[in-house]
Image 1 (cartoon, rainbow, N blue to C red):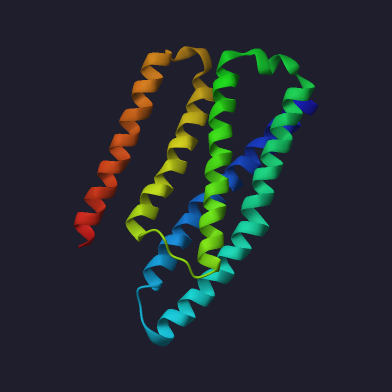
Image 2 (image 1 turned 120 degrees about the vertical axis):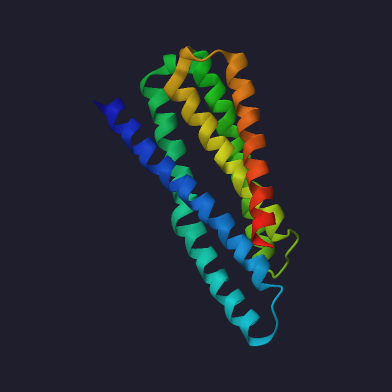
Length: 176
């Protein structure tokens, strides 16, 4: 029963974590676009986006990541055999990369907090899709477990990434 409770809480906080990551990068995009404006409009937008970013990052995203990891580690402590399963090792590899993604997103947050805009809105749109790749990969690994061949999974991962990038380019063309 405890394992099921931890699993449910792990999933709830994982959804919150990804929601925070997706929206945070969307706020980065709006911030970068607002930075191109002039005068009062720029000041008002930048000020509002900084408030929204701070609240989202420290009230939702960081706590959701920490709780996702807490309940995930808790499941491994409750059932140590999880760590020996190959699909779980692969999932944990992607989770490690997702943590690195989260930390890099934090650095972008700190830059924008200090009015440093290093990335264009288009670059940030691509950055946002990387989180989507992590989400798709982790969910497919867990849901399909041993049903999916490693080769097909890897090919599917890269095809999905290519489709996302093409979608971004198409969106950019339609927008201009």
